Amino acid sequence: MSLPHITDDRFDDAVLNSALPVLVEFTADWCPPCKMIAPVLGQIALENRDRLAVVAMDVDAEPRTALGYQVLGMPTLALFVNGELVAQAVGAKPKSAILRWLEPHLATVAAR
Image (tube, rainbow, N blue to C red; front, side, top):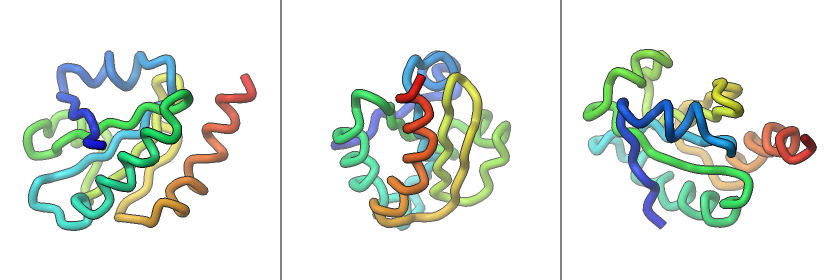
């Protein structure tokens, strides 16, 4: 599954105003680790679609949002819950590590 790409102009609607938590992959076309992690994030998106939205944002095409969140390395994963940045991680990681990183935040959301 390919992740939907969002733009600076759609960031508020797609991420900050989302009813679900949103995992944003800040990515770039020139970034090999970004290409490696994309299929993993697609799997996570499919397996958790009822409790998590996953989107990608190209930092070269959409620099405003990346600069606003001080994204300096790619890939950067940023988790937003109720419009707030609650966790951020830099670098490609295996699926199991990403899920361990996400789970405390998603468990809190599911408990509400």
